[in-house]
Amino acid sequence: MPALSTGSGNDTGLYELLVALPAQLQPHVDSQEDLTFLWDVFGEKSLHSLVKIHEKLHYYEKQNPVPILQGAAALADDLAEELQSKPLNSEIRELLKLLSKPNVKALLSVHDTVAQKNYDPVLPPMPDDIDDEEDSVKIIRLVKNREPLGATIKKDEQTGAIVVARIMRGGAADRSGLIHVGDELREVNGIPVEDKRPEEIIQILAQSQGAITFKIIPSIKEETPSKEGKMFIKALFDYDPNEDKAIPCKEAGLSFKKGDILQIMSQDDATWWQAKHEGDANPRAGLIPSKHFQERRLALRRPEILVQPLKVSSRKSSGFRRSFRLSRKDKKTNKSMYECKRSDQYDTADVPTYEEVTPYRRQTNEKYRLVVLVGPVGVGLNELKRKLLISDTQHYGVTVPHTTRPRRSQESDGVEYIFISKHLFETDVQNNKFIEYGEYKNNYYGTSIDSVRSVLAKNKVCLLDVQPHTVKHLRTLEFKPFVIFIKPPSIERLRETRKNAKIISSRDDQGAAKPFTEDDFQEMIKSAQIMESQYGHLFDKTIVNDDLAVAFNELKTTFDKLETDTHWVPVSWLHS
Picture 1: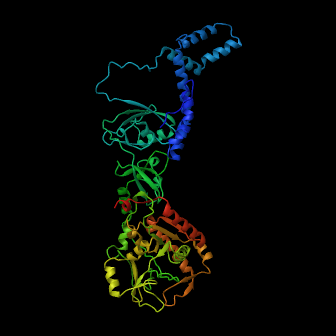
Picture 2 (picture 1 turned 120 degrees about the vertical axis):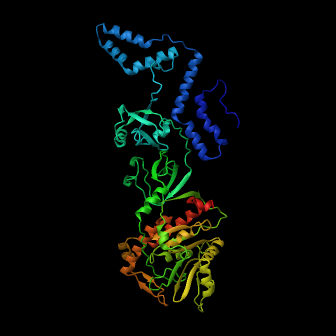
Picture 3 (picture 1 turned 90 degrees about the vertical axis):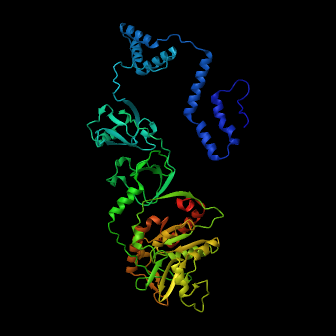
């Protein structure tokens, strides 16, 4: 980098150099972000003021000034005393008033200190009669604004002492570096705390503003420095610390919603982790239940898992594959690829707490992520899929299902269906080659894993709709699925928007379209509630299909962002 020009002739001052620096650095800075940072740093008013003070001091140092006197404060006191004995007129009164002002006294005191060049604080002498056995006491003064102190306390069961239980990462106590876990608290703002309960002390701290003075006995334990956490998790449940009776300090808790991304700052405590919301500028962490603790207490709340079955019907839309969500009247078999190994009851018993995640952005040469659509019968899944396919047939694709029924005259193998024998179908079922399959009128129908791979291999986005319990088995490194839940609007809105619509059923060979009934609406709402309750933690996006055109536009925007933006995905997808 060439030397920075500081002008010709006399040496340009540091302040002028500081102002000129960003413009001279501009050709050598690569990114706009770095340039903006430099402008902000060098444009900071406090820095400018500091440099101006530095220049003034540097100038006067060159002049080598000598103070006229070193006792201006004493002289002012003498003058005030002498004026008191004089007849008081208005001028004398004004001068006495000025000399008595604290800021004038402080100014004269500073003048004397600088004149004497004695800047060290005067410390009291050490007492001669110190008991070697006496605990060393530390006086700490912290400035607390409206933020919490960022520490929790507890009563030692054996000694009865009030000790610091934990320090919240990024809080006022942590930033000070003066208070540590295990320190014994003796006084807060001069109030002894030995006979007080932790709740009473917390109340004192909560009511204190500005500077707080602590008298503590430091812990003898060596505290290992903890690095800021780089672990990120996705919350799979809602949490409000104010409703948690187990949390040691509600004020220290961090509330979050299902789907929020949290940065774990500390896992020192096996029961209560410290975390903050990802991207939050506030450095202070809050308490959240640890994964193990949350799993344990949720499991205890569920002594008996009762699975509420989803009542679903098979539907057929013109030009589309048959869905395998068969009704209980029609159903002999309706299984996912894993059901022979894992029951629905076992799946539901999985307790959703947190999932470790990492940022992911699809690279140009990568296959597209599998898009899984989930929703109750009649909500409009097939209509949305059809609109997406029509919008760009080269970009979107759907799987071709397998069946054991005979091929009809107008059908082509590999177009409407892939026709295979019953023996081969059953062999593929045994080998877990189907994502879902079902039996209808003594014929099998199913969606194979290979049919999904076939769509993705053509460099297309594969649109797949399945039963929600199947979703968890598709969440693999290979497919990296993005799961969209299509949700019905309120039942009042359903009655209004679907009153003239038809629902197409495959329960008869004609596939006759029938009007929606009140039972259909009730069933759609109920099914959606069950899906969201049991499997909502697996959904990446929820779209309410109130108006088909609006829902389609939202879906299309989601797809566009999915291909270009960075998303949080399970760590296992990238580190397998």
